[in-house]
Amino acid sequence: MIEIQNESRRLLDTEDGEEETGVRSDQDAYLDKVKNEKLFLASFAAVLGPLSFGFVLGYSSPAIPELSTITDPRLRLDDDEASWFGSIVTIGAAIGGLLGGWMVDKIGRKLSLMFCSIPYIFGFTIIIAAQNVWMLYLGRVLTGLASGVTSLVVPLYISEIAHERVRGTLGSCVQLMVVTGIMGAYIAGMFLDWRWLAICCSIPPTVMMVFMCFMPETPRFLLSQGKRREAEEALRFLRGPDAPAEWECARIEDTSDDQGGSLGMADLKDPGVYKPLGVGIMLMLFQQLTGINAIMFYAETIFEEAHFKNSNVATVVVAATQVVFTAVAALVMDRAGRKLLLILSGVSMCLSTAAFGVYFNLSSETHGNHHGNSSGLGLVESPLSDDHVAELSWLALASMGFFITGFSLGWGPIPWLVMSEIFPSRVKGFASSVCVLTNWGSAFIITKTFQDLMDLLTSAGTFWLFSGCCALNIVFTIIFVPETKGKTLEQIQARFKGTPEQLSYNRQT
Image: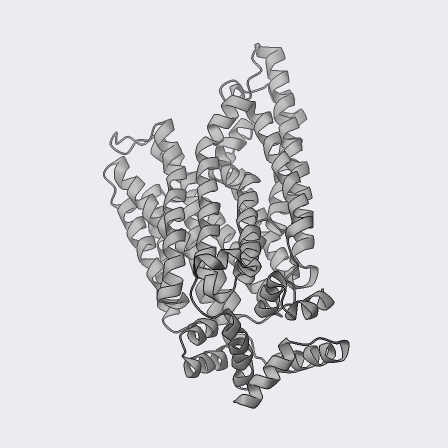
């Protein structure tokens, strides 16, 4: 045991070039023996949670138009109620983020995932049985609560069971399954009414709860609870019978000794805590300031304002674009790196939202010339002539396509991936919950005020505001976001803390 720990310490604490070569050789020799089949299986079981989360996000887009025109007055939504129906899920998600931060530290990653299936199922059941608007709201809050727990726990679970060769790809599958769920809700909404759609949405969380019964807890959590034997068994399940699980256990334990203990106020003065916390919070804030949730929650309305007659098909195309390019991001994540993809993503979104603003500006000017009204929102009530729509519709379509492509390649998956990689074990629950609260709190504010922004700034001004935020996230990425490609979680955390492992990290970077 002592020899294994000494070898692990030598591998993690290298200080010269010759030892650095040895580190990479020993790590590669270990990883060459790893079998990934059961790791992929465990990851698939976990990402059924983000799939459920995607169905929650996508549900409002096809359901709101139907509930706004339903014959039953007890369930009919007016404009304000429809806005709350779309945005109230983010309040539940913010609460779920706080709850998830407590749960992952108290009962572990696996049980947290299993328990979050319950509010998903109950929430959709209440929506199915709804007799009034308040039951619809309650169902949305519960599904939002489950989404908040999911958005925190699943990235942590995958980052702690995956090794550095595939962690980026598997971590990106979280966002891939979210957008797959959104697309699934859009497609199902074209054929099912709102109650049957809710039944469809309740299937993934049910399957996840069953599958997770057979998956292991993460080795890092088990080691933090002093359960070394169980941790080794979990690693043998995840890495296959040929990889020496004792070696990886010792490596994790050796670093965990330095990160042990519970969170205290003094830890907030530790650069290994406040630096990654600042990066995580800003990543989540900038993700929402791109305007993505406002665009997706009100996708059909946006396309109606852009004068696309069949907005249902248009939103399905948008969702399919997200799925395709998030899959591309997952495939290249461990080759291109996180930082490069974030920068390219920010540039794409900055340009495309600016172009979308130009589209709405030109549309409103043309409308003003013909109807004496230059309000951006006036476009919905008094569409342009077919000739003018044909002249400008290509710009709206291209802008939306480039925005969704850019977001899917970087700012969609990467903030959740980086959040799961950068925090020390003792603060993961707290720090992750703060990040999730930031994400969903800002998502609620942006989603709820989106229509007010359109009224205040016009459609063009709103998208130009989002463009300016995208420009700021490019600058932030260049200056503050570290590259985590190919690094162990311990090396990433050492980079922030400034411990000897940072030398190894910087040389590999």
